[in-house]
Length: 84
Image (cartoon, rainbow, N blue to C red; front, side, top):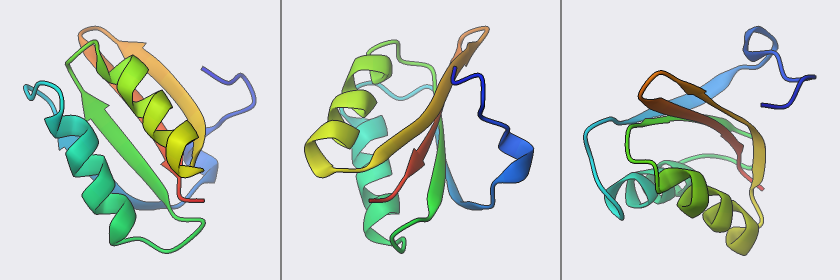
């Protein structure tokens, strides 16, 4: 996780709860949330599929969004994505 990132200092646009879902569903849900957001909005994604670590980073790179931070809490992978 980015050491300078503090979740308390941002305003979330939306949260995607993809717990229990397998690839590609978490990325598809993020894509829908991004589509419904404005540039600069922050979307929090909570997932349990380990492949989301790779897939969400690639999604951000390919579509010019910004991965603000990511962390693992137990079995959950949490990402904060800023729409580019």
